[in-house]
Length: 257
Image 1: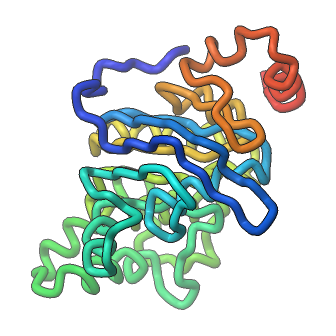
Image 2: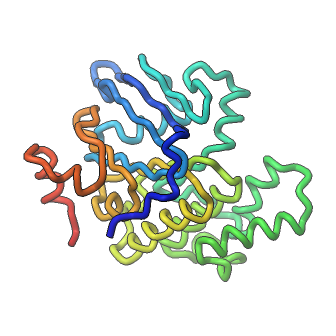
Image 3: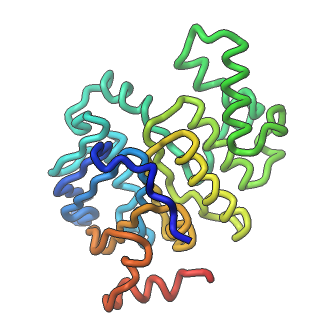
């Protein structure tokens, strides 16, 4: 089933990447990347491990500087930003990491309180509780509010990590391998959650993955990365309607019916 695209504003780009290059020593990782992400759109960056997918996320968030090219996010020219402006931009970005990045010594409630208290110093206790309960309800884990991360499954920790990101009301979500290490049923739940977050919180997203099931379920568009370049960008079905053997072998090896 294809995703409904009526929520996308094609007149409003939120990420514009042009002619992006990045090397580490003799290793050319990104070799002239072009990508535009529109408001309300989920774009999947699909490719094998080590092809530069995660490097792209680090460029978008200002963690790495390009060797050349343009990275514009929400109107910010990212490579030129000073620390103050970078912090300002990152407040508008949400990161979902592979390991969920929860604090093991804090309860779920305390994990969600932490970014709010750190960044919103004058928030009333009632507003704090309402914000926590709202995002926990959105990820289906309100009942886990007083649990410790060690008491949660991998899928539940992933959901709490997404909730902690959503509590800051980001405009853009960056998902790094959201289904890595999860069983197929839990992966399906996370895929459904990514789509639900897009629809409920009106986020734009880049989803880094090598999981074709995730790509098909979550992406409005898919950008297929091979050897540091996007070889094809379009709908999931159009990407794999090709005679390019590199793309077809990726499909045949990875896809789970």
